[in-house]
Length: 201
Image (tube, rainbow, N blue to C red; front, side, top):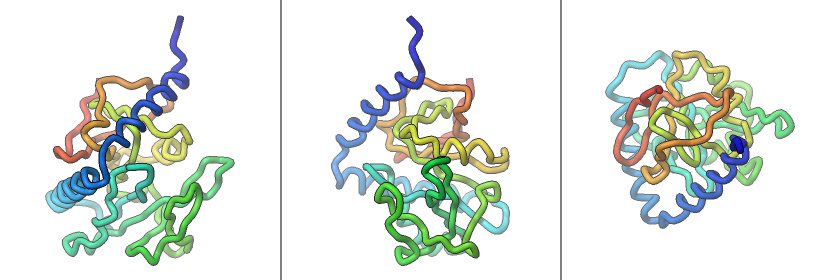
């Protein structure tokens, strides 16, 4: 009998969420610092479009925490933009510039979201790169999210010029994941062991 990809994804979500939660808080904090250091070096080692803008996220449920990037002097020229849910019904997010904790408020699902100020809105199509959280990733760039579809809608409209980087702990890297036609693959993966290009099948 054929496996329903959506049902298969739900099984994977439960499994990978449990696996990520086996990491202790000190373990995650240590790995977070490693990952932020690797990302900082990566950003400084390349030439990027001006202005330098990057799509980040506020971590939840044990995701990799990248917030300390905002405090790194070497990245002072970067524009950091974070998502805010604009419509739960349509599963849409919009990104806004933020530079410090005071620029956030508690929003949908209890997640810290940037204050909505039209002057600080940043269109994802103008990012140099977008950092994407997830529950699991494969080396070929397949991503397993929570199933809400918010990032799917953002990823679907990105031009090839925007580098899509999946952010994870090494334990979240798996050999295979169920995928559907609308799933957009990552260009690279970033974990505590480094940043690598995805090998497309």
